[in-house]
Amino acid sequence: MTLVQPFEVADLAAMHPADAVEALNDMEAEKGAALLAAMDFRSAVNILEQAGLENGAALVGEIPRAKAAPLLAEIAADRRAEIFRKMEREEARRLLALLPDHARVEMEQLLTYEPDTAGGLMTTEFFRALPEWTVAQSLEAIRTSAATLETVYAAYVVDADGALIRAVSLRELVTADPQTPILSVGSYRKPLFVHPDDPREKVARLISKYDLSAAPVIDASGKILGIVTNDDIIDAIIDDDTEDAQKQGGMEALDAPYMATSFWRMIKKRAGWLSALFLAEMLTASAMQHFESELERAVVLTLFIPLIMSSGGNSGSQATSLIIRALALEEIRLRDWWRVALRELPSGVALGAILGAVGFVRIVLWQKLGVYDYGEHWVLVGFTVSAALVGIVTFGSLTGSMLPFAIQKLGFDPASASAPFVATLVDVTGLVIYFSIALVILRGTLL
Image 1: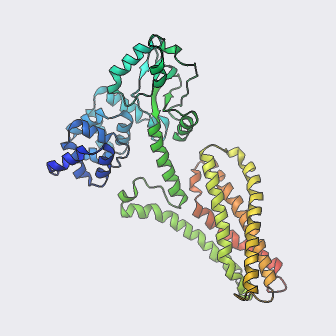
Image 2 (image 1 turned 180 degrees about the vertical axis):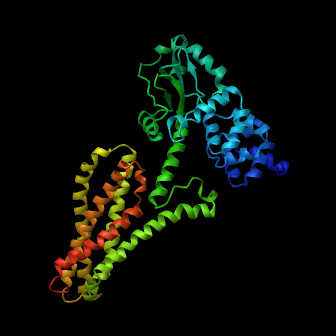
Image 3 (image 1 turned 90 degrees about the horizontal axis):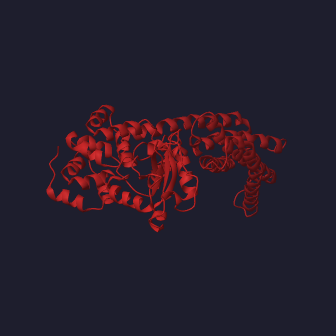
């Protein structure tokens, strides 16, 4: 292991854990691991517990197992599970065997859940209270056990089998009469909870809707398994939004921070989608070749091709973004596709009419001011562009709104209906609509 200068260790230990995490993220894993191994135990634990530590698994992998195992045993269970998930399988197996029995059993349970579910996000370190306790007994139990808990947002009252009876917030406990039975504190409310296989989006909605600090996770029998804290769900939401933004940008989601992703890994993530979009755009050339004779007779029509294509793509991208977000927030469901279509159809017509009017006015101004001469049939050209914009924007809005439904119905992430993909699809069909309308309006004049 790399030798570390003492002042470097002291500098890192003196930082706030969040600042120390940023410093470690910018270091090579070997040097960062040497610093962590040389720090005092509690400081190293505080740093490893930070969610912002991007290379925790790599750092732990560089620390000798005799030092790494005690550090892992001390950090919060959910953070420990996150580190184990990112380790090489063999290394994770060796370290798991070195953990204390209770921590090993805990990890084996947490690792059975997918990382983007309530079970994968939960921590098993929370405060349990017995139904026969008073407020005073509960507060005393919190004082004596607080050091072993990740956080204390509430007292979760459980029966002899571990089934959740109710949750009493810490604020309610502190403000209640010490001799009051814990089950009598506050007004009774049915406990809010999620199941371990529930997606993180559902957990986020529950926490947001009811303004919770944590959401209990219970199994089918009602036994409480752990809690998902609001800071954990915020981190999960950020990761989810980042993944969706990358997919909507027309690429595979990165599984590491931008600067930590290798050159070839970045190429691999981007090249596939880019190639698919390029091949799809070739259909645009095919569409133009199909109308080659019309283009030769009415060259003026080519001037508006970029305008036509971009307008359709933009309207489709808008609709796609709106529907993907609405599906993610469960504002709409698959069965609502027809309601969405009935909204987007008139919206597309109205938006297309607005753009068509702007396009027609632009042609009139350019013609009258002498900026450009569109020929003797310039009025018909203006009507052609306007009518095409109405058709293309309507088609783009309808297609962009329906594509996420189709993709979700097939079992894929709706975010895969990326804006570039929709734009490419609308480009091809937009040209067909444009020239078909031109054939109708300009037949016998330019065509």
